[in-house]
Image (tube, rainbow, N blue to C red; front, side, top):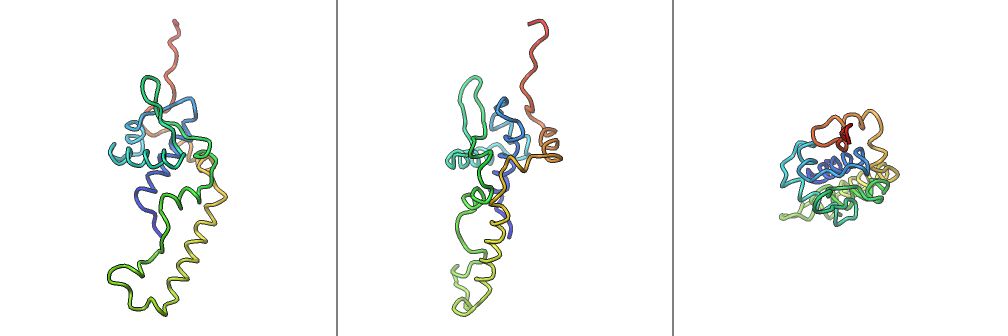
Length: 154
């Protein structure tokens, strides 16, 4: 099973936001630059993550993106299921439909394998994915990794 590019990008964006913490609220453009994708792709994915309640976006001065509590600690299996949508691993009902669909056991076996995949993800959260060494790698990506330091003179 291979995740769609949108799901892969959504997970990378969520991981980047998780490692930055609540003090830092990067813009969508900064996150896009950090994970190495065009702004337009990142914007679509951020919109989807907002609708799922995983990311919050604040507009204006001091605004930016942040991971919600659900995005930080919610089930990774749930998130991937929501991003991928429901459906079979193979397209038995595609046009034209598979001629074996009425008696083929492959579809059922692949559905079981897909559910096993999700069972592995279910107990995990995005927050758990950003432990070391991943956290250090994520912090080393370009973009605003930490809030600007205060000037020593005030």
